[in-house]
Length: 316
Image 1 (tube, rainbow, N blue to C red):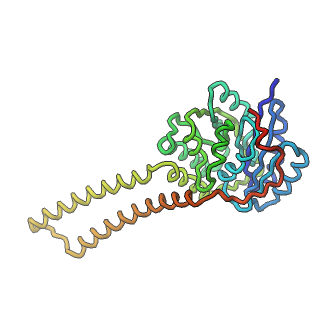
Image 2 (cartoon, rainbow, N blue to C red):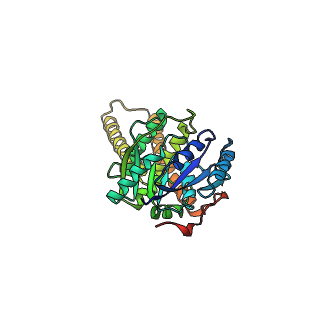
Image 3 (cartoon, helix red, strand yellow):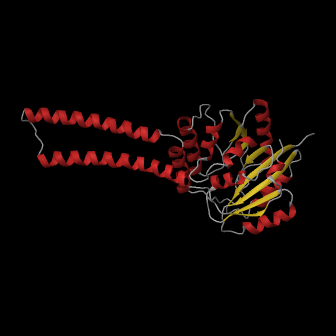
């Protein structure tokens, strides 16, 4: 039986107690020609020591990248894509919640339906309330912002063909929404129901702030929905202001209930300035993102501790 050539790209952060079990689960897959790219996202724990021990066990299977600054999960994954050598590429977490054997279901679905990307949809999610809420929001918003027309449930477990990861690896990792890149490249995206386990150590590096940041990158980085919404809201406010002004004009002509001059002037100026600064704030955010992408040269400092194979040897 031919083995599926599969690269696992795993960002690593605060997982000294879990990463060994994750790698062990992958090594137990019999029908997979596997490799693992571990990206240490400047983790403050002793995971570096654990990874070096794993390299001694699997010297021909593990590529280890050490980022010198914390860049976030999605940026770490994009960095890891530069080093994959297999036909299929899977992204899973380092916390032991994603059983590697479930990737076999995703490979089957990819081959049967000619998908370029397959997402793993969790049967019973074991994440925190905030992370579950963020995932639901991302999936709903993605229908509009990144043209997720098939309503694919976006998750952290993905299977991609290497031509997709090749392109993504050449993009800037800064302020990029990883799943936005995927949907900008292909409409051939599917999903498969998979199992989800409890965390091994019951702790998570995710917090509400990080989840909100991902959500903002999603909305601002890949659509103009927000700025269109602001323009629409400003238009409605303008209509309301015109109607209110017309009513006061009629009351003034009839000498009924005329407001004092300073109050009407103050309210008018306040309303106009609120609208102006709101719109300028949104436009400034877009300009800032454009400037960042123009000036960014993708200069994450990576210390390649161990690379087991060269890119030229990629299986096709």
